[in-house]
Length: 230
Image (cartoon, rainbow, N blue to C red; front, side, top):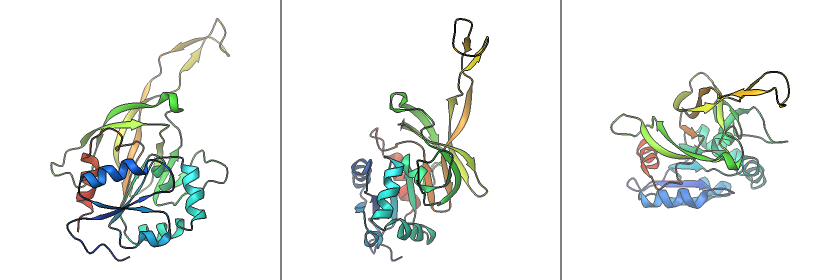
């Protein structure tokens, strides 16, 4: 695929079918990147990179197939088009889903298995500081990102060649003792915490469980733009 001719101002597409499109565009443009909303196959022409934003992953999948952009997008990434995928974008990039919606498909860009809504529903949304090992970070140290987890997925399996770039502790389900059910004799003990994968990279695809565009911190986008520079 032909890349942008402007070597000083990368042209970055944002898949603009549903979800947090405008937030990503605002961050990219604040960093000096040119942007394009991608809805149709021809919108992929000349891009230096593309963002797959958060939203409803099953809706993004249906609309991408309806607009005939899914297969051209897959081919573009196979050809080396850099991707930053966030939240639903991670789900859409995965090879396998543990709990897909009926008929849901993915692009299969990275060899991972993903569990949708692993952090629970909307009322369990939260913000956390997440260390993320981004390419393009000059210091070489992980970025401490204030990240929004909104009905966020997790990676439950990372295949060979997949680099884990971010993890966070996630409470395991409460363990009930004192007999079955939830009657007077049942007790719960505090849930143990376990580290879960919320960021991965394979080839030209960087995929994150969370929203880095929500909190006014552009460092992650800046590091990604640096990594795709000519």
